[in-house]
Length: 307
Image (cartoon, rainbow, N blue to C red; front, top):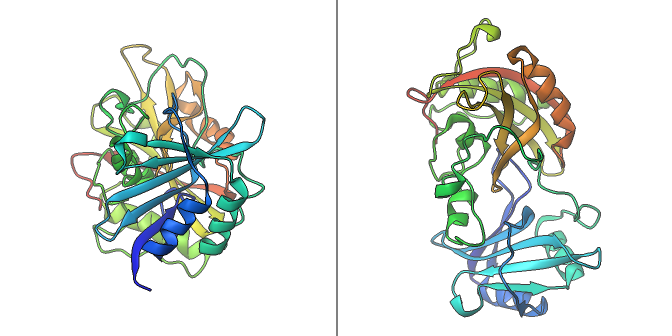
């Protein structure tokens, strides 16, 4: 049977997410088995972690599926239908069917993880500074009010966000510079991602504490790696700064994979605390094991080239 659609599950931040090709008949059967019913659009962007994006062979999104907690304390599945404008949003309580489909397609068991937010979600209540998410224009983030922004969010990852370049290619470290990622071991992976980032134009500062990140084009970023159920993954965090509010206020921010950009950890006032603040935030990167900070690098957006 001809494979006409690609299903992608959102579980990784930097590396390409797992994909599987399916036929139109299998897609229609899956959607039918879920017993979706029309519903109102959610007020906030739903949880993209463990979500599915279903595209046609041209790469155009057909459906997006998300998990979300329901009022009973369990979970439900949300479906965003890009083609049927009369019922863009639909919902289903057939969570078991969703779990089985993911297990069948990707051999990933999400049954014990449905209430975990994405590898990225770490919230700060009423922060005093706002990292450069560009939420007002949909530059990185999307909301149910602007459905088409999800297409932008799903094709730009943590590397795009860290380098402040939206390539719409789910940018891979070293791809623009021809430096391959080595998956033969964890040590080889960490080293190849570090060297690939440097080949892409990121620099390794000799003295981090002398970095000037107050210019519009300089950013201090952190390369983080981890092990996941789908293999090794890299993640990037960016140190955000806003001198209009507080010249000594900093907070790490990030964008994990297909998810929205968010804060990471707590705000801090002294620049020298950047390492402690990020280290304290590492446990919030869910779905990760043996997580570590590989290096801090400097991004000059005028010279970095990624793809």
